[in-house]
Amino acid sequence: MGENGVPSEAADNAVRARGRPRSADRDREIRNAAWLLIAELGCGGLTFEAIAQRVGCSRSTLYRRYATKAELISHLLDQTVRDFAPQFDVDASPREKVLAYAGTCARMYAGSRGAALTQIIAASHTDPGIAEAVRSHSQMVESHYYEPMALLAPNASDRAIKLALHGLIGAILHHVATRRDTLSDAEIVRMADAAIAMAQA
View 1 (cartoon, rainbow, N blue to C red):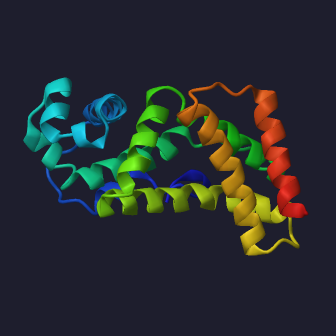
View 2: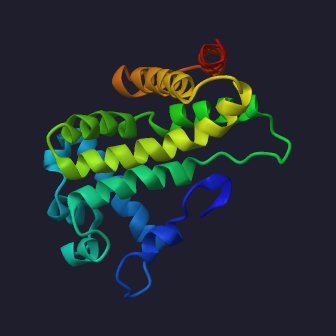
């Protein structure tokens, strides 16, 4: 487990077969190529052959890392959370944490990653493996928001907290991923405060 409760990539890699040490640069190149392919062609266009051509590596390089397309997509989603995980001061307030996570969400899915995310969500309706990757990723993201939101709304039910969180995350993704819009810091603050008020109501 890494900082801020985010599972570390080392822990993720531990479940894979041991072999030659993996190159962090090559891993990053593979992720970047995969995000762009999904954004451009959808999940149907995401093949190990296409990634290998873009990265300039062999398909065996990819198969050593990911057994299936769904496993690759799961890694893309979860590693994005790790890469963008905000750092907090030890005395950060629950509201500051909610605001930081909301701002992180807006940055994570700007540009091609947002376009790719909409394709991944669409594919999850027909592909069980991708659906499981999306469910797992959603639970990871929700877990980060949940604790500070629960502290801000101590009398709220579990359902009320989750409804507020889903409303906040969904609204941000609608703007940055679906509409390809840019949210200002002030807009993110207003959206986060509205979600907090909803949980407290």
